[in-house]
Image (tube, rainbow, N blue to C red; front, side):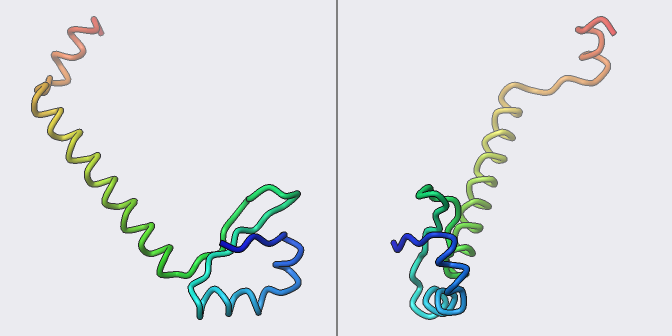
Amino acid sequence: MTRLSASEVRERFADIYNQVAFTGERILVERHKKAGVAIVPVEDLELLERLTDHIDVKAALAALKEAEEVGTVSLEDFRRELGI
């Protein structure tokens, strides 16, 4: 992965845009020698979003399964347990 300073990215943005878009290269942008952001092809971003969605769905399904195993309590019973 190529590492570039933020100032270099500002100066060469059009070239870097084309480099990422057409070659699929990933660019790590640094400020004060510390990585801050990355410039990645849109295909990489779309894959990351699909993976995140998949992880979210798995977590939601696991939470539903846990709720089914534990059971549910009515709001009235819950309030009674809390004394409110």
